[in-house]
Amino acid sequence: MSLEALEKLTEALSRLPGIGRRSAGRMAVKLAAEPDRMAAALVSALDQVRREVRFCGTCGALTSVDRDPCVYCTDAGRDHTLLCVVEDPADIDAIEETGAFAGRYHVLLGRISPLRGEGPNDIRLRALIKRVREEGVREVVLALNTDLEGEATAGLVRALLRERGVRVTHPAYGIPAGSGVRFADAVTLGRALEGRREA
Amino acid sequence: MSLEALEKLTEALSRLPGIGRRSAGRMAVKLAAEPDRMAAALVSALDQVRREVRFCGTCGALTSVDRDPCVYCTDAGRDHTLLCVVEDPADIDAIEETGAFAGRYHVLLGRISPLRGEGPNDIRLRALIKRVREEGVREVVLALNTDLEGEATAGLVRALLRERGVRVTHPAYGIPAGSGVRFADAVTLGRALEGRREA
Image (cartoon, rainbow over all chains, first blue to last red; front, side, top):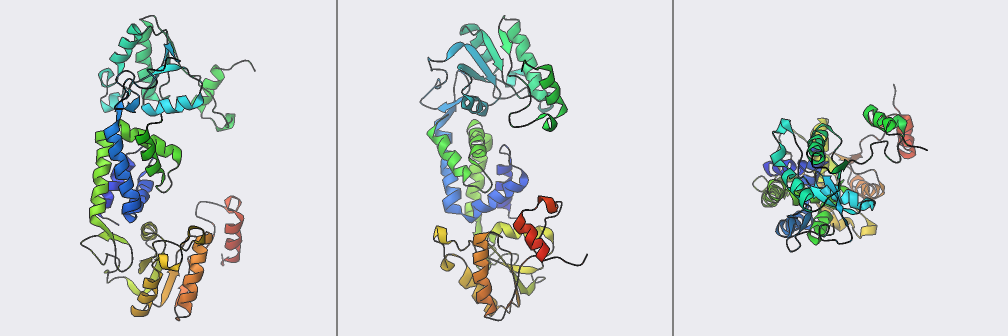
């Protein structure tokens, strides 16, 4: 099948996180085969999101147009001295699901990537420094990706915050739940051993 | 995050093949976070597909509005006495990729499913019988899913075609390439043993 419209849709779908070219192709065929039930519903949902969803002007989380600052920023039950820094709005959902964090968030909306020409001014770093200074933040948890670019970003943020006297932490590195030593890669296992705790 | 618009988009995405609720949620957040680069591109691609892509009036494959019958039906190099019956247009792509089939196709656009109340009149079965009668088809390959509903559908199609004197075949069942006996489920393995060949 080499229909131009299907190719274009496959291309647009394969840019979504976790979607390879092959499953994007299957999704495109399905959407073409069910124009009313599936494609029209998706178009309408996308339009609604574009009309109603915005980034929170304070923390960068996704919120609705009529709720800025967002629910996290305005929740009086949260510890305002504790701030968790993440790369992407989706990271917040993952952390909220754990129920293990009671502070607020700051979304960088990106990461430093010399390869893609993205530097400190392309992420919400200045806004983070400003918040830390103005909002009485005492501890910043850097929950960034544990890959090269995430670590480069973490290094810079840590340096900038430490010179301002803020405590900077990161979540523990180690072996994931439901896994085991023999399934872990060497870097993960090395970090898990360095960070070993009393049993 | 419980934004109604995001929920609706997650719902629409999770109806796509192979997309679970969790990855649909991640995709929705990504689309909301990149309204112009990702969401707008997807909407435009979906609109183009809805304008330009149709089912072939003969075989049911996807084709462009200005090309009906489709490329498979009009390809003089294909064996017109050999017809492969599939459930879904995406099945054709999978078969074409193998390069192992030189006949034409007939897409049922569904399957018989008593549970979902879908019977013989809900799939393109009458059109199949008509084609077999009028186009001089001698062999029909039933490439339907190897699950319960696929087999119920195959059983009916086989019965209807055999009483019209057509040869009905199906692709071999067996152990997939790159796998092995100890990875196969009992049904697959049983079929592979029944269908054993000279080594």
